[in-house]
Length: 343
Image (tube, one colour):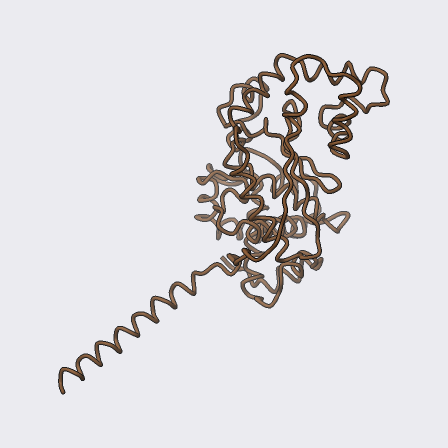
C-alpha cells in the first residue's frame, strides 16, 4: 500500500514538473512562428542577368525586343533607372545596352555573381516561406515575381508593378574587392553578403508596400513607421536572427539590446520624440557608421531599433491587434501610448 502511495506522489510531482516545463516553453513561443504549410503559393523567379549576359557578342534589335517583352515592366525600369541608359525609343539604345553588356568589368562582375550564386534555389525557398506568411496575413494580396539582375553596383533592390528585383552584385560578400575600390564605407559593405540577402530584400519590398502616410512626420512617427516595417519581417521570417532583420551585425544588435534603457532615456531626456528638425531625424534614422551623441559601438539608424521595440511592445500588450491592423494603423501616438514601452 505504501508503495502505491509513494508512486502516486512521484507521479504527481512528475506531472507538475512536466506542466512547468510546458509552461516555460509556451511562454517563450513565438506567436508569429505559425504553420503556413497549407498556404498555396507559386513564386516565380526569373534570372534576368543570365538572359542578358549569356551571349558574349552583341545582341540584335530583335533579341533586345524579345528580352524586353519577356521582362516588362522590369526591362524599362532596368534601362531607364538602374543602369540609366534610357529606353528603346532612343536611337543609340542598342549601342548603349550592348556597351553595358560587353564591358569587361561588368562581365567580370557577372562571372563573380555566377560563382557566388550558382544555385538560387536556397534563397528562393526562403522567399517562398516568407511570402507564404505574407499570404497568410494578406490572403487577397498578390505576391511579386522575383527578378534577379546585375546592376553595375547601382541598386540592390528594385520594386515595380508586380515584381521584386534583386541586384545580386550587391551581395557578393563584405570583402569583395570592388566594394573597396568603389569607396563604399565599411559599415555598408560589411552587410553586403548573401546572408543578408533575403532580409534586406524583404525589408526593401515591405517599405514600398507600406509607405509612410504622413507628409511631414516627426521623429516618433518616423521611428514607429520603420518599426512597423521591421515587425513585418518578424511576421514574414519569424525564425531569422533579429540582427539581420534590422540589417545590423550581431555586435551592433547586441549593443542596442544591452543599452536599450539608455537609448530610451536619451530620447526622453532630450525631448526628441516630437521633433520635426530634419537634422535630428537624419541623425537617428539615416545610414551612418554610428549615432552621434552615443558611446562607441553604437550603430547608425538607432531610431529604427527604438521604433521596432515600441511596436513589439505594442503588439505584445495588445494581442488582439492583427498584422493587417497594425500596418493600417496611422495613429502613431496611439501605438506609443498603448505599448506602455518602458525598457
